[in-house]
Length: 512
Ligand code: SAH
Image (cartoon, rainbow, N blue to C red; front, side, top):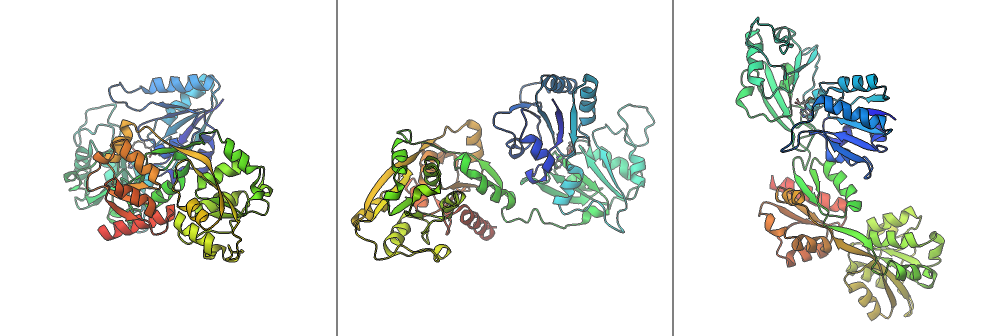
């Protein structure tokens, strides 16, 4: 089988190529290293074997020869192997050596180019590597080769970069792996005649939420703290400040998402696009109902007996749909959904809810059911009319533990209500790494009271100081958080992932 030498880009998962995503989605083995990004690794199937060949604490780094042999061995064993590399696999990444080892061993390989940090990190910092009139060339150089003292004539196999020639080029110099030796590099460029006033910038952790850009000159850049990995740009273009990435509303914020993994993708994606680092710490997961789904199955056989099928969560809708054959099972029963996420799940089965309340909480759903007040989005459909008979029969499919506002309110109004457990919410163990992430975050987001409860139960409250904001998707979740002594700084006016994102943006725009 084939070994894919795949360039993952510099960090932002959106910079992975289409071919890269396609190959990853099918990988059986993924070999990755230190600069690989979690969100890209997550694109491989959960069942794929993941092998870290980067430096691990307390262990010697795997040699290039060992990595080559590993790729050959897995390739020979018939696996679909993805060798994930930061940026482009052939730009200072030893992809050439790996390809050579595979070729010699007769193992098929494919090279999938990636977006190199050499160009992408400056682009994300608002620095064009070429610019008409000020830069007619761009030279990408490794700073890893030990620079000798200026004009030293002593021969050395390490001294492969001709910095004097680079200093004469007049265009843009882009230096990778240059942080550790920057002082010596700058010195050589200066001695070779470059002006000390030449603009110079270092883009650290480019394209990531932790991106940090330092702008200075060739003479002064070394006075600043620089953290690897960084791309250093020297030349007139380094003075350009076409900022766009670092000005995103949530840029640099570390936002913890506590939703179940299966439901966190949308929020994480929105957070990432707003510039935040979405940190997944799932506190709860969705499990089968405690009776194995028997009562739901039984109820699903007779959906047509009900006037209303009421779904108070996307999970409930998903569980119910899984037990039905197709949309015809609903017969003439009307369908109520608590909010747009629940409606979205139904839509996949081509069921358009007859009712979605204006506010996505049980109280509003109850009122809408009883009075026929529906949201604008569904106003063209027939509303729950005031003339509903006293004997209205309703089925509520929901979590094992849920509030009773809705069934009790309906029963008080004379409705006949069957409540069935469609799923259960289970607490998830929180690893030490996840604890550290929580302690290190700017905001913790909660989308349900169960997540809040698990947060408290796992002893995480003690880890967060006053500087960490608590954000809740709606009033019920916020009330649960307050009950447990959390200081809720952010509450989404619209109780959806989008509403939560907007509330976070408002919060940070007013606090910065
Ligand atoms: N193949 C990679 C380069 C690997 S060498 C590519 O094409 O991007 C490693 C060097 O790349 C680092 O020392 C740093 O100079 C640069 N680098 C990689 N990712 C980076 C990032 N996100 N931001 C800034 N520099 C990065």
